[in-house]
Length: 434
Ligand code: HAM
Image (cartoon, rainbow, N blue to C red; front, side, top):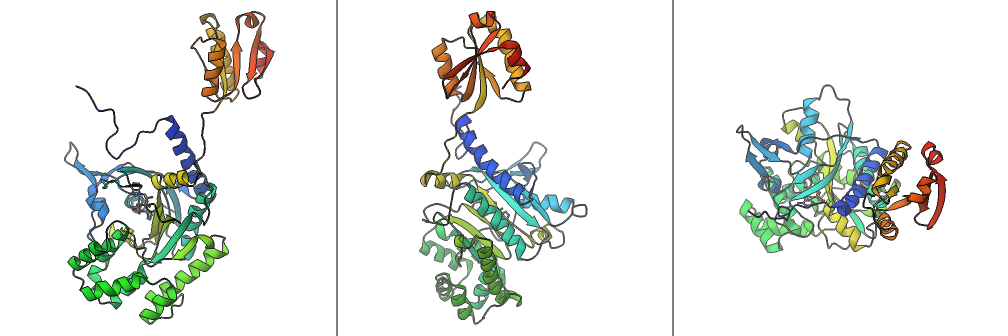
């Protein structure tokens, strides 16, 4: 039997070179999360399928990798982290101290139609604030996000945050006479705007029960560019603190002002076409896209104040985002910001014959005890080849165990970059390696 050597379609292998890049990205995500006081959590990639079943016809539900286990349980590989987060919070609700600021970097699985930027497995940085109503949570999650992007070297010329509010979308649907029961299914369809043609989208909206006139009026609204235009078309001025939709318009204005005040204004724009495909969002929704508009969304998130109550608890305000590892690496490659990462090690200890192996092991261990990263090369190569390999594995220094020097009780320490060598007494080196 021959087995295929390729990874499963839509999944990736991570050789050390890819792993270096992945760790670089995860380190930025972790470090930025911690800078803002987010704490890391995790859960198992296997969950009960029920956790993802939603009435509105979310695409994610259709893309589940689900199966029966040997005990007859219906399980799924998680397609996203938010339902697991909600489950963890509800499980310990009385013991946890709110607000929670939690982050995770889960691997997620979706049986997607594969296009550029979408795979069947991806890692997704999530940062969520749970139990804090009000806009400071919005500002925090957007700030942690944008700060991580700045650490990658990105600026407003390359990335844009597109912001909207589900309450504004609800008001538009109500205004054009779409019954409330259809709001969520309509939004799930509207979210496909980037993936299917305008005609296909209109057809799907008609299939949901919208009249041709309603589809056309909805499209008129989606072409509007400013909050003011939308407010006027709906006959509201929009003040923060007003009830319902009018409040949402005012809050959106205030959010933009606050983001400006904390130095992120240059990235942000209101965009009525941002809907988000997940039905649990209730307020602010946002997506980060490349400024050229060529790639799929880099990141998406929003406020989901009723997900926890949908799982049987009391309503708890919550907001967060998911930021995948696929599109961001494509963007960084495109704009020339991918870092050049090479392996790095402080020392490689090189014996030239079997007789020197015990000395090599002792020196290597002394270096590690002193806090250095030390490898040993037991290939017994000629000096030139051994040094070439030391360069390939990224050694800063090489400790050469030459027969004659060793006989005299000396080691040769070579600085690889400077190509300088010095002789050092073995005892002294072992006592305090440098
Ligand atoms: P989402 O929009 O489904 O939201 O996914 C968020 C991000 O994950 C996307 O913007 C993209 O970067 C990445 N992503 C999603 N699917 C794929 C895929 N098939 N291949 C590669 N990357 C992908 C959520 O998952 C929400 N749970 C986010 C959230 C957290 N909302 C609140 N808290």
